[in-house]
Image (cartoon, rainbow, N blue to C red):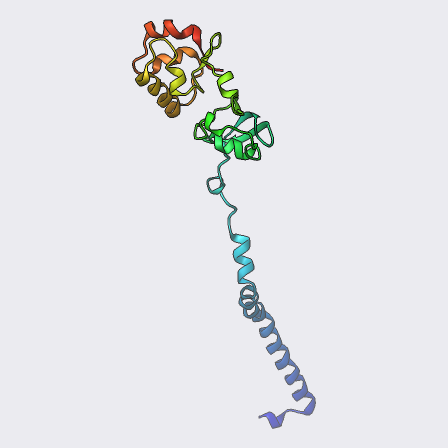
Length: 199
């Protein structure tokens, strides 16, 4: 049958056949190439689809307090420390104690509270600055158990309860709050209210 066509007709049929094959390839080419293109960058596609970190995954902000450090330290000044810091943390933030510092005169393990002033004494200065000295009030937020016992009707047991109460609940914000301590009622408060302070 192929022999019945002239050369011209054979050439035309061949051209039509090539055009037909080309049209078919043109239609299916995008489908053949698409998977290959999407497989070239799997890592990139994962990065683009990854969600941003949520607020729950971010680190919470640390609550800070401000404390004034004075006395026998390398760098006295105002410092910002995380809540829960203690006196020794403040001394370290201030560059450490000076050579002449009397560290036995202060409780380095005492928790700090916002807005207070901490004094690091030199030998002999602590006695002179004793809040129980005549004419001076006892700071119920700073005083040791021994200093608290200088107050009327405050013996060893009540003094220790005051120390434990402020360590557990934080500093007193008013002198009246000392009545929250077990064993200290209105009667004892009236005896000591003129001799105590929170500053």
